[in-house]
Length: 335
Image (tube, rainbow, N blue to C red; front, side, top):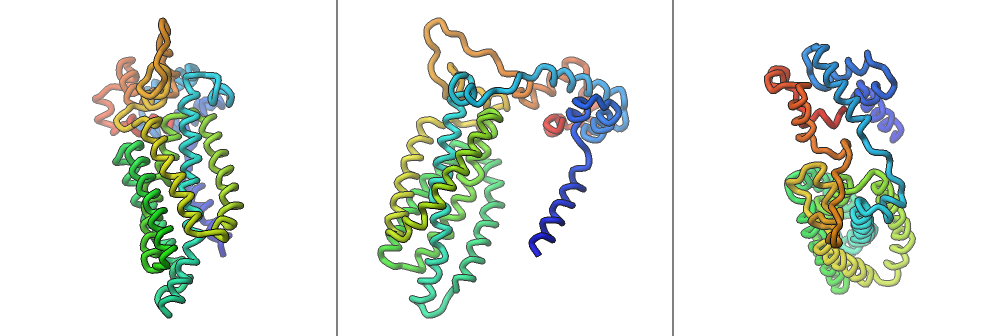
């Protein structure tokens, strides 16, 4: 039955993504489809002249983009990117080591103990449904927190709360307070899925290069593999001890987040990529006689900057934008 839903999802994705981006067609030298895609995405009301202007601008921006950055440059050798990459890899490590997997693994035992202690109440199956519902509701709320609050603030509040919850779950486990364990487990899931869960990825995408982002993915799966092999052993040794360990690790992560992670709220796309560069707000201080690094390439300019450049170059005009509802703030990324 699961294969049916996978097939339906794939068909839905195919119908949803019906138009390739202008950049794709331009790279293939397919001018006809590139113009058609621009007319669709930028809503030019069929104006071929304006579509050609936007096409020339996209071609120019593609030619100005910097070359790909190697993994060694991104992680260590190039100071423009190294600190951002190292910070995000560390965040991703703490993201896994918050112990979310341990809580999820132990949740079934919590519901089983609660049922045995009370002679009724929630069965493990019902508890699993409740945990799934908490995950779903929290994931939807996570969309709001990521879009509304600063990344640094969300990570700090989330990890601080998670550390406290670990210690509380450990204490409730020692005292065999099954009902309180259930409540704390649900709160833990909600806090994780609205803070660290989505925010760690959002921060990495904003502040590091694509090469470093791939390293973040590797880090995530590395620690998940380690956690999958150790959690069961730790739980068999001591459930409360396991929660104390993860609580301690999460408490250390709060210290790291406070001293090494910068806020990106209110910054342009370019500024987010630059906050860890030498001389920037969260980068190292410049040495005597050292000049700040030059601005990054075209691919890291903010959408507002690109819109201003297109206006100043006469590629578009405000009147045309108002008439055609051309929203470059949203659509420039689709290019």
